[in-house]
Amino acid sequence: MFRWRWYFLSLLLGFLFTAHAHAQSGFVYLLPHQDDEMFLAGSIAHNVQAGKKVYAVIVTDGSASKVFGWLNQLAKSTRAVDCLKNQCRGFPGQLLTPLTIRQFIEARNREFIASMETLGVPRSHIILANTSSTLEADHNSFRDGHLTVPAASTLIRELSKELGMETFVTLISDPTHPEHPDHRTLSIALQNASEIKDKIFYSEDPIYSLPIKLSLAERRAKIKALDQYFVWNPKQGRYAIAAHSVRKLLLAWQYRHFEYVL
Ligand SMILES: [Zn+2]
Image 1: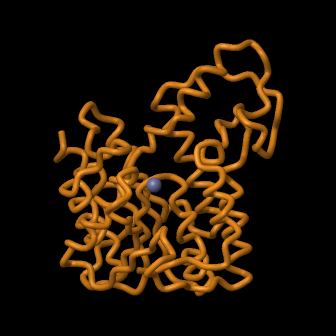
Image 2: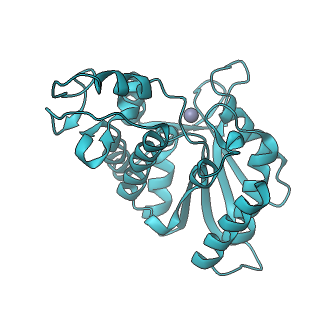
């Protein structure tokens, strides 16, 4: 099963990109969950605005969010719903229908794609590693909270081979934060990846990190991109999922003038 997954991912990537014998100047952003770009979207904006090649990869399926249960609880009611906690933007007063976990994952991916496209990353450079995993019975390695180092390492190796980009970027978590096991797993896999020439690790914690000041254009792009996580329009499959699960954190990072590299 595992081999088939990579076979299909390779076919897809092979179709989109020709093989590269040498690493090219460009960036691959590895994001553990949908909305994690809040910590580095200014960097993505910077590279897009500089005309660099940028790829964005969402790794886990984001299925562990508590918003899944909240939405399905509300779907039992026959009342039109504005938004779960009155913090959405968009189209109030809509009836909800129950979501399967698969539909919920797709809705999270939709938010991520909208955010990346707003930053200027073309759809063909947005890679959903989590989708190939959830299509199969054996999807544990990319399930939210269950990412494994071997699965992340294989993904990085395949991406490096197919995309041929020089620089890989991800987040690094403080090991004392047990709530982010996928962040830590992904950062370990990238640290171990000997085939990658340049590696950049963005930190969620300003302490001991190097602050990078965002330009006005980068901040504007970041604010617009993260606004996508507040869009409420159930008819279009938009449920402001990140805005409900991590609202304070999202707002704080959306308007911050700095990002932090370790
Ligand atoms: Zn995350």
